[in-house]
Image (tube, rainbow, N blue to C red; front, side, top):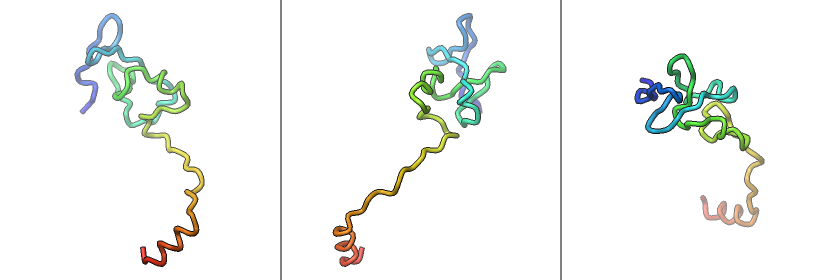
Length: 87
C-alpha cells in the first residue's frame, strides 16, 4: 500500500492533503519513507524534504543512524550504594 494514495497531480505539481509535495533529494536515497508517484519519488512524511536536510540531518530519516557519544558518566559513590542495596 502506498501512502500517497490521496495524492493528485495538479498543474502546480503533486498535492496531497492540501500540501504541495517536492521530490526527494539525494540524501533521502535509501530511506524507508520514500514513495513513488508518477515515476517521481516523494517523502511520505514531509512535503519539502530539502528543508529537513538544511539543518544537517532529517529527523524522519530511517536510513541514517545516530552517532552515540561516550557512555554516560556514573557517579562512583552512587554506584557503590546501589551495589550495596543489591540493585
